[in-house]
Image (cartoon, rainbow, N blue to C red; front, side, top):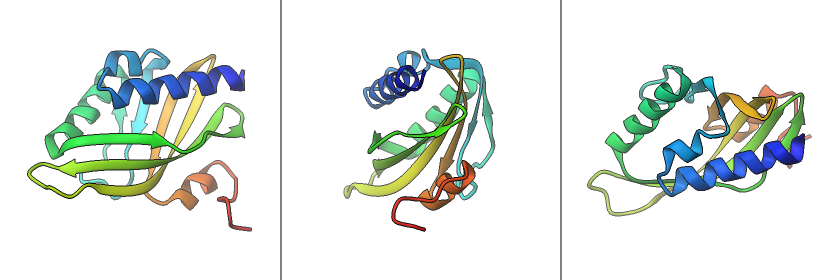
Amino acid sequence: MAERDIEILRASFDAFNRGDYDAALSGVSADVEFEPPGDAPLPTAYQGHEGAKRFWGSMRDVFDEFRSEPEEIVDAGRGRYVVPVTERFRTKGSQPEIVESNAIVFTMTDGKVVRVQIFTDRAKAFEAVGLSAPGQH
């Protein structure tokens, strides 16, 4: 099951990064919950596919470019995966690329993503699933 889940997550990242949001949602439950980081400008949770598209649309309002590149996918057990990501973006009208190291926790059931939690602090993402961040004891 974990291998299939990981393939679904990789395909979703690939589709998201090429701007194919329908394909990015193909492995996502219709009633998924997207939870942006608590320090986001609009930290409201988004529900379902339409909510996910609204969330991504709000990012397009702020950024000219946005990529989320998974570094690895860590199986945390019980259908949960921690994905440290390098996010590269340019805010509208800005020239220099901004690069951030964040993490996303995905919860999956029956081969579908049911919850997405985004963390700006990688250690907190690992803590959320009961693991220590790599390099911490």
